[in-house]
Length: 336
Image (cartoon, rainbow, N blue to C red; front, side, top):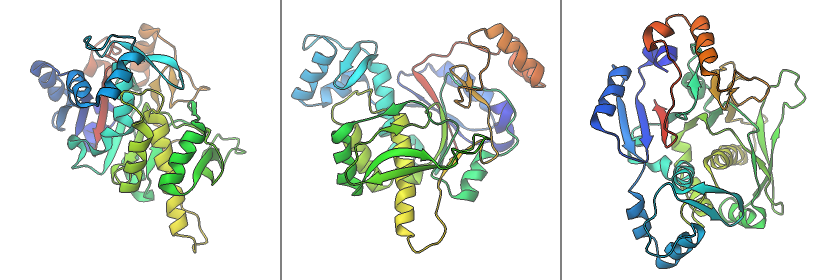
């Protein structure tokens, strides 16, 4: 990120982590980021404290989900099931989904900032960013600027429909790309809403996006997100991808309802490539979450060689081995 972009911009970094880092690790990363400010922030209390804080009934349900006897010591690495979700996730992964869906927007470390450039720890920047994506956010007054869609989908049935109706007065039915017929794969997302539809939502990719934190902190959206994520603690199914999608598109819908007399519709959800800022971030072997634009997958030596050939000065700065395993529990956010 420094080589690509932040040598110029010198924006602050915040590294969110579930587990504490050793001070030497923090100092090593701060030295790399300098002169930009870098902070390592704990996402929240320890698992032990979070479990102790929930009600006895919530705690009993959690132990049942994790197939553990009440009173047994739970760790972030215990795998637990949940109603309505076919997969099984460990508590650490479920917590990061819950944290990124709801708790992150009001985290103390983010309070001074209006915009957040989110990048997962297992995502890789591959080119120089010649256009500042944050300037695009500001110039277009966007709520979210995203790289990839569709990236999975989420239902929720009547249960989610009722949550929409309770907080917004309408239900989001599905997400449309208004430029779907464009052969250049351009995108302009919009939400179809109704009083009587059950949601089936194609999601924005969560590995990278840029968000207007002031919008996501709005009372109406915070109340919805709390209701959406807090049926029970440590839930995986209502994750960050569907949360950022819902808030981005509902804010766009509400802005247009407020602006009904205007002849021009407001679009506050933007696609990076369509708006001329393809950032070429690799995640799960795809550039910008595009399944048709793939890189070599897990052949790190070949990947290193391609990066070094295509990006002058990178090897001299980062050393011969550019790709290294990154702990999955650590997530990276860069703020402006």
